[in-house]
Length: 256
View 1 (cartoon, rainbow, N blue to C red):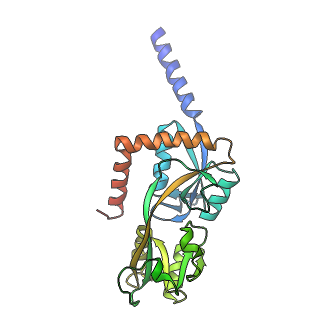
View 2 (cartoon, helix red, strand yellow):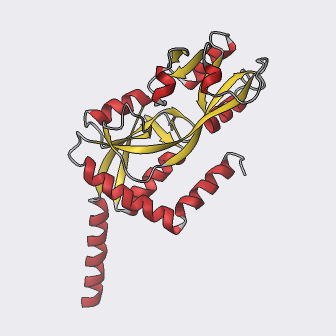
View 3 (cartoon, rainbow, N blue to C red):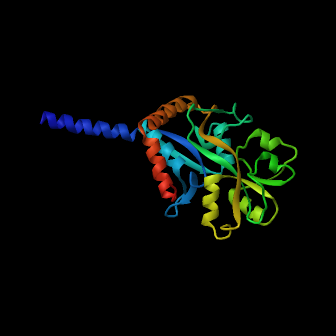
């Protein structure tokens, strides 16, 4: 009986520890599939889904922390992190402009190419880079992070759009000559929509960029949580869990 009482007490204690686990609020962008995008489940508030969402959730869970996601447009994701409303935001690229705004962990969440797309009837010779964008109209998504050199070149005429979807529409409407999209999200978006499929093509890669869960300097737990997350993400990288998640993700997208 004494053993049974101790066992029951232990189970109750373990349950109460789980119920009292730390909860952290993290902002997730709502329009960057397949890494992070908003979905509505059973008429409830929008929830994020995608590889980065799963990775952030699982890494924190491995450290005994539950994540409460705040699903918002990317520009608001950054603002919430800057003012400390949330502990962090993903997926953020580091540039000369924002490198002092956030707490950056040594290990990024993911790597993705920044690509140039054009209409299929556009004639190009070789791969399009920054030099080939000069003297052309180029579309980009407002609020996303791009290389400072690209965004300050006086010979590139830039037009902002509120979303990647709008960028593609601008391109097909001939309002711009080229658009900038991350390659995998861009190709999946083009393939999924009959309005874009077969009408837009990849013409060049500008860079291979790293993306982070950027932590808030204004949040009281921002620095501590960045260290906790870095520790967990490092474990995922070392023991193969990150690789397994990425392989499963690529298979789910029909990729090798």
